[in-house]
Length: 301
Image (cartoon, rainbow, N blue to C red):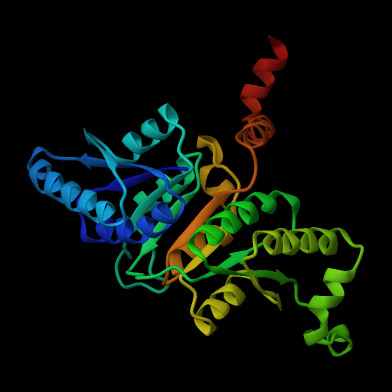
C-alpha cells in the first residue's frame, strides 16, 4: 500500500498524520508527506511541521519521503496523485464557521472530488482505530469500499459494522413490518438488494472483521448520523462516484458530502465506480444539456 499524507503545516494536518499512521503502520505502507506552501512566508513553518510529521511516522517505524511544493494545495495534490499511484490520500480538515450544519472547508471538498484514490478526511483527534462504520448503498459498486475497509480493518484489528438505510415504507404498510426481523429477511431474500448485501456481509466475514449488520429505515443521512452518535466509531466509510470537472458537485453526491460535512470523526471517501464510467456519464450529460445554439450549429456542420 502507498499512502500520501498532505500537510499545510496546520495542527489538524498533524492530527491527520497521527491517525493515518495507525493504518500505515498496520499495513506496512510506503508513505510520503507532501507539504505545500502557498506563500513564501509559510515555507519555514511548513518545513518544521513536515519534520514533526516525519517524526510521528518514525514512531510507528515508518520511513516517509518528504516532498515540498509551492503553489495551490489542491492543484499540487491532484498533480502528485496523477503522477504517482497511491492507494490512499490523507488530509486534515476543520469546520468552517459555526453555522449548522458546520460546513467543511471548500479545499477539503475539492481534494475529495478531484483525486482518484480514496481520501481519508481526519476531523478532530482519534487516538485509536478499533471500530469502523461502513455505509453501503446495497449496490454492487459498493463492493470496492467493502473490500478496502475489510482489508484495512483486518490489518489494524478493527471491527466493521455494515449499515444499509432503506427507504421508509408507506404509512399504510408500516404496521406490517417487523423491524427487528427485517434485516434477516432481506439478507435471506433472493432480491437484488438481498443478494448484494449478503455478498458484502460474507466478504467482511471472510476478512474476519464483521461486527454487526444494521438495517435502518428512513432518510439516509439522518439515520447514518444517528448511528454514529449512538455507537462509538473511530472511522466511517462512505462511497462516492468519481467526479469530473463538468459535473463535480453533482457526482460527489449529497450523502458523501453531508457525512463529510457533519460527522465528528474521520471519514474515508471511496470511489465506487471507475473513472471511465464517470467520464462517459459526464460526456453524455454534457451532450444532453448542450445549449440549443450549439446543438443547431453541430447539426448544420
